[in-house]
Amino acid sequence: MSDTTAIADRIAEMLVHLGRTACSEDGQSGLTAAQWTCLRFFSHANRTTCTPSAFASFHATTRGTASQIVKTLERRGLVCRERSPVDGRSVCFALTEAGWAALSHDPLGDLIASLDGLGPAEREAFLQMLSRVASTLAARRGGRTFGTCSDCTHFSTSEGSGYCACMAAHLGTGEIDKLCIDYSGADHQVDGKQGKDSQHDSQ
Image 1 (spheres, helix red, strand yellow):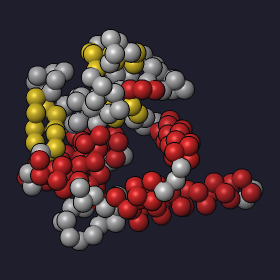
Image 2: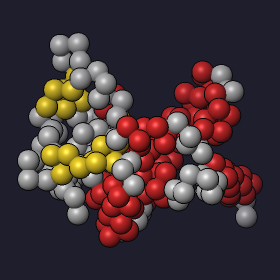
Image 3: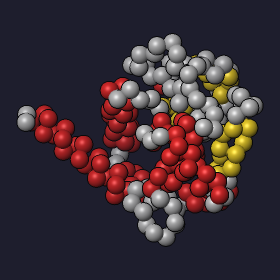
Image 4: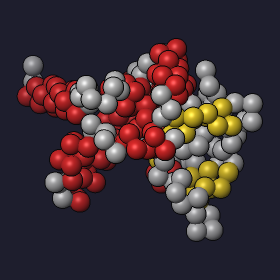
């Protein structure tokens, strides 16, 4: 094993270790790590990405499993169904007041606090590196890359806010930093079908 590969192996192990440690179930909230991930995802996703199918892609799991996780959160009153703003026949999900309250006790908080200990430049560089690795991994496995509007090729500024060419919709300032399933980074090869084939449904 070369020195370069050995270092990459150590980084991969550390990332997995950090993820498991940060997302470990505390036994007090009654939520599993996957349910916490779903709550987080819906809190950060834009209005067209808050669907079980989008969460399945993000969480790298099956739609059936994702749907069960969402249904459990819905039964517990942490998320609720809403009409899709794009397709009135479909539904999307949003956090309820109880869901937002639950996130105030997110077990990921300790990791966030640890990252806050880094300097602003370190955090920005770290985020950019992790985003590149996530995009490369998704491409290698044929998965989707999630990102925000600010660095998406579909996005352009419009009248002080923004415009998404994929959704053909204007975006408010509060939506630009949301996760999107139709994200296409500058270094991501688009085949012309991405966006049209996205599953904005409740499957």
